[in-house]
Length: 295
Image 1 (cartoon, rainbow, N blue to C red):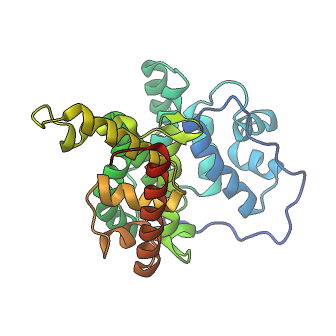
Image 2: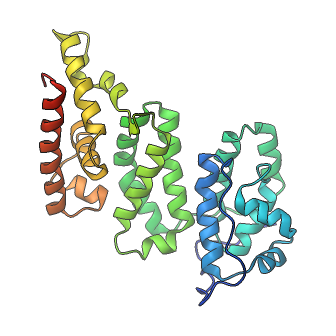
């Protein structure tokens, strides 16, 4: 079987009214990476107006198998049935195969099983849309810097950033036509990063990032005092509202320019970015004063 180009194939027309029963929720047993690709696939089913019976007819698999796949219920699905569903929906194959593979590894599937599944389906090379390529090239470095502040380990950083770009490709037509592509893409990246970040008291834990800063170099006098203050500072940053946390992390930890780069990356206007930065600084001063930090 050879895949059509999902990027160039238009989505089915939006249905005026959804037929059939409302789809059951995603199973609680589905992992983070599994849910990541299930959600856009389910969204595509809803927007296509296809009933489950119609999807069964197009995919060639039973209603039980398709229903289990769309819920993330039971065993992790083989690539062949997953491919049949996304082909029926007109979704691009290349990003979906990477997302499926990552989720298979998360589900503890052996590499031999993954390779065998992929070998059963012949797929032609499928380049991403040119606009998606340009977006990826522009955002890879700042997205990676942000992810590194929370995830530290390079394999996890690459995973979160790559997953973001593949999810964008999977729904590129809708993403590119949105009012603010960069804003929506940034929120997607943030969600993928924070879903995998360590948490403490319900907040992302930034304290480990202290050890990657120049201020705690072994050659710096008073290193332990500096480290203590930085731990307090990074803990306070993680307690900020999300937009404030993002601006501070991008500016303070990643070294991005507040005037142009941070607004461009986050999709916020320069005026809103400055206002967010101002409120973040005031909030940090208040948080640090209450914790008695020397910083």
